[in-house]
Image (tube, rainbow, N blue to C red):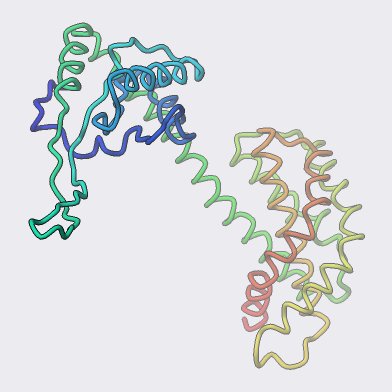
Length: 310
């Protein structure tokens, strides 16, 4: 942080606290202050448009701001809350000699001297400690961004894993002479998808946990299959020029939908618990399957049509 002269302070201070009869902060403002306090950032709160208030009103508003900082678990010195006028434009009614009135826009001068003083005092008080605090804040921000990047990576990678497993299930269903739900859950495809999604979320389940999850899910597939067949049939009708929808294709889409729903339910459970909890994952699958079927029908139907062409 560097000391600022009045001419160096941008108009961006206009985005700080602004009230006509203010006594509180908005939620985004409280959230921003909380984030800065968490990162141990040097903090000065600026009440803008101070020219609208008397000195007594300014003092009351600044006292309220300090109370709100205390409420979110922070601590701020009173001299770190200042009131300024960032300037801008104001509408003024001018009266001509003939008595007519006209509204014109005038430039309102900035008055941010108290902010410059507060910044200079902060620098003088903190001295070399600011460098250490800045480094800690940088590391915290980097860690937070890494967590966000990890979450984004898991979203992308889980989509790839689920799509690959769904595609394999569709291929198996198209090739099956007598379609059956055991191709979905009890076979190699279901085990491989479960293990790969668990690895993605840093979970290392026992083989027994994987088997239990797939077994619990299998019992729910039987109840969900009629619904998935109906959704699959309706979804295929949305594709023009398809003609009569063959039973094998409907079954392939239905199995693909169940696999897609199974994978997405597992992702939700892993996100919540950080590990494979068989009963919780199977329950998530059962409770969310209708929503997943409806949301994924066009995507899975398109995938099945592509595979049938091949």
